[in-house]
Image (cartoon, rainbow, N blue to C red; front, side, top):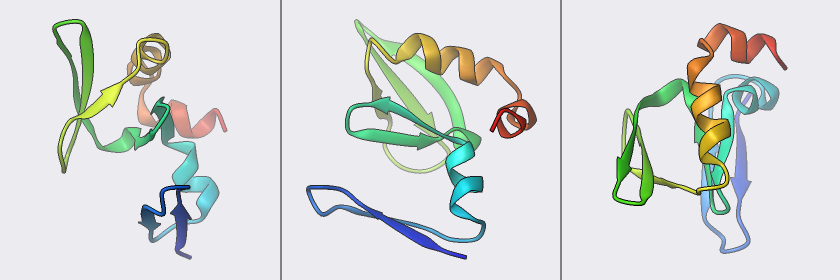
Length: 86
C-alpha cells in the first residue's frame, strides 16, 4: 500500500511499501516544517547554535531547539524498540 502526504504549501511526499502506520511508526517531527524517517538517519550534528539531521539521502534537515532533546532520545532507542512502542 502506498500513500501520499500533502502539506499546506502543496509539497507532496510519497510513501510506498508498507502501511501508513508502519511508516509513521518510524517518523518523527523534528521541526515545525519537517518530519523525518528515523530509520534513515546517519547522524545528528551541531552547527554552531543549530542542529542538523543527516539522512541517507538529501540535504541535512533542520532540527528545532525544542524538539532536539526528544530526537536525541529517540535516536538512542534501537529501531526495533521504536517500532514496538507504537
